[in-house]
Image (cartoon, rainbow, N blue to C red; front, side, top):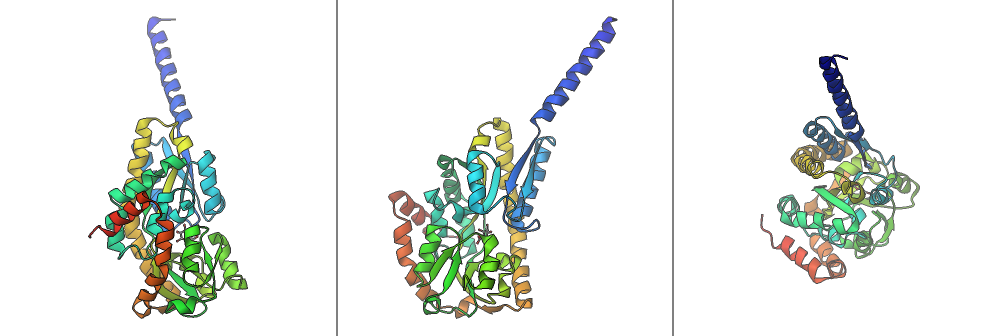
Length: 329
Ligand code: GTR
């Protein structure tokens, strides 16, 4: 073979090998989600996937499994823990029993308003809480706001006395069980996918969530009285499996972190619009709203005091609470 031909052949071989290697390392991370495809949390992870793909020359992408198709939030978090699943977006309530720090932003009536939430959870305190996921085997990427959760039932709720004896569906979390018990009601933990039937069949009389979930899951059909108790502002959280993370090169980890962070402002815009649209949609669908101004907030705050003492129960957790309540916005 002529020398020039041999050179060409070896060049081609190198190129083919490089392509094959790049292909072998291409990753489609799998992420689970309970909401439907067009919900803001899903759109945010899709945005993250596009950014990640651009940053890695098309190598990395994220495939989302929506609508609880891979199981409940608890199931998918367990899959992420063992590395069977790469990522998950869940309510941070799913981590209450796993990451003690994750309980803090779910303390009832902790945040004064959404600006107070943003000033803390999108800043150093939020980063501290996310960093705490690491020791439990998760890489906390970002938190997203989820507005305020309020009670809905077959009757309006104006004060704590209206809660007496109600069977209320809660997220599977000791704090949520404690929060509802402190109002004199009976908490029933169950995954979100079961709540529609639970309300319809009378297994539960009530539930609590923000407007977008109340609308998306059609809970207003059986529990048409939405009362703006706004008792908790539990954030959403996006986590990566530490098992998988530790196998990734540093540059790839940095690209994932950056794409996740950059999805937050995009999400916030979508979320704000969705809250308004969902409120209008449920009213159109027959829901009756009791506005925050007509709720005896003072009575609810008073009833929830023991929950703070029970769940912010170490010097470290108390310090986190202080950092949040002490932040001015
Ligand atoms: C929603 C949240 C979901 C899920 C759901 C629930 O607000 O976005 O991740 O936790 O609440 O009540 O189960």
